[in-house]
Amino acid sequence: MDEDKKSSRPGVIETEITMGPVHSAAIEPYRVRLFVEDEIVKDAEITVGVNHRGIERIMEGLPVEKANSLTEKICGICSNSHIWNSVLVAEKGLGIEVPERAAYIRVIMEELERLHSHLLYLAHGNEVLGHETFAMRLFYIRETVMELLRMIGGNRVQYGVSIIGGVRPRCELDEMRIQKIIQGMDYLEEKIADFADRFVSDPMVISRITGTCPIPKKEALRLAVSGPTLRATGVELDLRRDMKEYDPFEFDVITQEGGDVKANLLMRVLESFESIKIIRQAIKDLPKGPITDRSWEMQDTDVIKSYIEVPRGRLYHSYRLEDGRVRGSIVRTPSMTNIGAMQYACIGHHITDAQLGIVQCDPCFTCTDRAIQIIKL
Amino acid sequence: MSLKSYSRARAVHVMLVYTGGCNGCDIEIVNSIFSPKYDAEQYKIFLTWNPREADVLVVTGPVTKHNEKPLKAIYDAIPEPKAVIAAGACALMGGVYKNIHGDIPSEEIAGPVDKIIPVAAKVPGCAVRPEDVLAGAVAALPLLLEAK
Image (cartoon, rainbow over all chains, first blue to last red; front, side):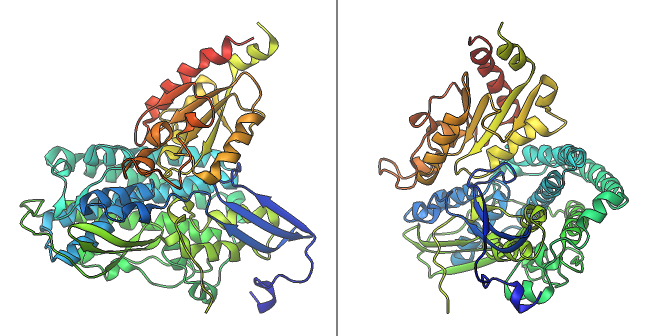
């Protein structure tokens, strides 16, 4: 945690271990360079860019509806967050009031997505830990969420629920769907609690992950880490507290201490329970009424910005509208800032912990790969 | 039946290569092999990350320019006989990334996959469904088993 531990590459480092772009431990293509001395990682460097598809440039000049559904293709894990935030940008600019029922359905989708993302994180984390049985069990639990997402949106991955002014008519929640969601939530709560009990009572797993690759609170704030990775270091910062969509719901902002792998894994387990809580409240108080407001008119706008809290942290979208077309679109995904934490977490630890340190920050390099320029001020 | 094809009939190893899609297909493919619900492992289909062990290469994503060379290198490293499955809309025709701007050529995308390496089976979908992945893997099996 001292000054000399971090990023100044000390003198000559003899061994450099590189991974990627395609590597067994990392499903996504990215490149890691680990500078190793006596099996201890002295410096780490993560490079993205292999995956660059130039989404923002493709979005330039597209009609806004088309551009919104394109943002969904940025990421296959948090696709709903992208389309939701992109739609929010347009709604803010055009002054559209979303019907209450539509806002509730969007929140339900977002929380379902958070559940599936967190369960995927836990499964991937356990796989990297070498505990394949836990990973398979988590994949089985996750399947319930995937079925619910498929039921509402019609597809298992890219469900495209939000449109400008509400949600798609297909995603209306009728009585049968509501019953299925309630059943699913009961099942998930029981199974995740069961998993958590098993997980924390396993001494082998706990001894492996306690105190591994910690990120101190101060460093996390300096590196502008966001989302659950930040909250795992003890900072109580959740954008959902400030979002007006989440005003009707009661939920706790979970924090953990230490920012090590254990804190991060438990963080996701506890957040899953909060998501279940929010979904139950939304289902209970689901307002009646229309789900789409079509009484809006297209007009030119200034640059509009929108931040929302997504499973991995803080997501930023901005663009301006010109003749119903998108101009100057900018997207910043949470993993962009979390890369700093990933590099930090590896340094000073044994090389066998390095992959765990990267995975504990919940990397999603696919969404992160876009044209960026880092300017040092 | 040679020793190689005898052993191959009992354990088909699938390698997943990811060339710039959105993560959706990859998770579904890992899901279809790994998750207890679909569980391709019960049909002796295993996921590997070593090209020298692999029999089937599953490629997802539209193949970005940066990924073209690594993909060729991985394809060359797999021993004969081998089969390539292109999974997902991006791997089949470049997906939205290549096609949304009409006829204007894309500067980022080198794909689709069959431009770069020969493809044996194609699995459609955005994202692919696990059932379709299993069907695609089964369709590619005769190529491996009948080879001398």
